[in-house]
Image 1 (cartoon, rainbow, N blue to C red):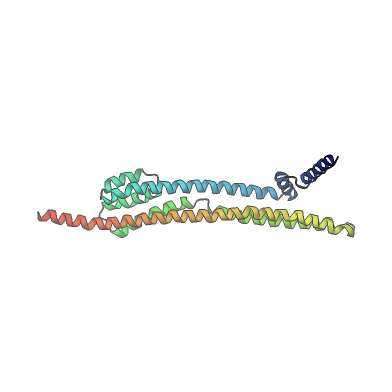
Image 2 (cartoon, rainbow, N blue to C red):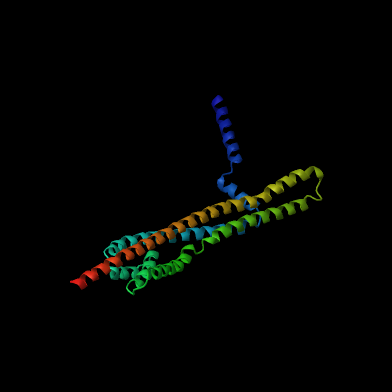
Length: 244
């Protein structure tokens, strides 16, 4: 008898706990439905921003890998002074480093000054930089839009709530108003939940882009220094040949 009572008590406790905890999915659905119509544009902005962040992350990772591979391949050839072969490799390369070095190598054999060489490489960097930063600023804009949509949904929800309780029994006003305000705040909460990850993604991608640009500029400086070191050596070799 005691065992049956204990079993019944456990069953009642399990039933009560299941009713008290509807589950994460049901909680999310209820939260989303209670937020009203403004939850849908916030969700759309968040999904669109996440798609851009993923695409940019893949692109920047691929560009970084290509730059490292191209630089490792070109550096030994540049150290050997074989600029013609380096020009062929840089021209056929799909990396940002390869394109910029191709700009510089095209000026090497034309007797140009170092300033002209640096200007040509800066021109190449200015052409590549917009591709690296493409669509990344949209993430910050989407974060602001999500926050503002959340605030707008909350304000409209509060206006609707105060209008609804204007002609209600004073004894019920507090309960109805508190429930309406709780629902109206869902849009602000969801807007912030969408905005924070988008801002973090924007900062992360900006940092990654800056790292790639810094590595390209470092490669450009090393290339110019190699050219400066190579030209005096060429001049000395020509003078020695004339004397002989």
